Image (cartoon, rainbow, N blue to C red; front, side):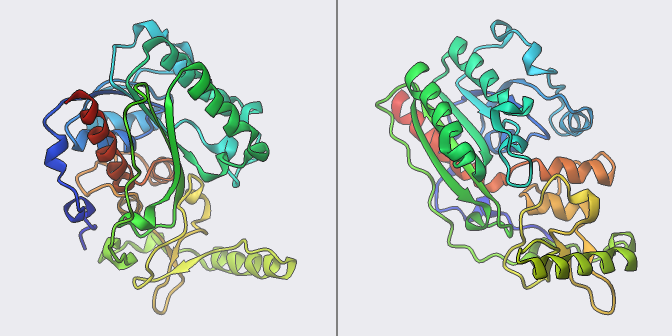
Length: 328
């Protein structure tokens, strides 16, 4: 089955935001999930940065561009001028699934690379994306520090909100905080309202799936044993089982390649199976034209680290409409 094309179902006129070319930079680009949304709306990428060699392979295959390397080693003065800074900066340092070390983790300091580039270029707008856990990390002190830098030091008018992919026509329960900033404080911005679209996992599942994605008897027994042990301990950790009628799945993570426990698909007369890489891509809103060029393991990692593209596209439309309100 073809994946849902939620763009066609938006109650907005996307053509209205396509007649002005805004430029952007794509930091911590991964496989270009955030970029894809802005590309769709006619914006132009003038610089990108990524360090993972496998994600870079996927990026090149889809965008015909090679991202610059480690952003910590790039002089901000060499980055071309731009209108919008986009950054899904590393989230593991703030994630519940990680150790939540925040700024003590090297990945958590990547926010200060964003700060450095914003301070030099002073673009009209930025959009940052991260896990919901960023809001309450270190009792909210981490996020407060970020807001202080963005608002008081860099002088941006900041908006932020936790959005969920399942509310934007995507069959995945994936909460992310989106942070938007405008240098011109006269600009107003509203986050997009949830789409009135019922989702169903079956809409993104493939009709014929290789048996290699069915988990082994040993792994299935291990999943069931761990879930029982966790239940007895009073916590809810364990595998999650879905079928084609499920309205949405749990959040796919970068560790999905290990055992697939967070999203297993029921099968008749057989053990459950993992999502295929193509299904995982559809779950994140990538259409079937998006090239998956790496091993299954790397594809799962890349897609688990990416963003729900249709949700980002809805945000992008409102960002561009707000900027156009300033320009025209």
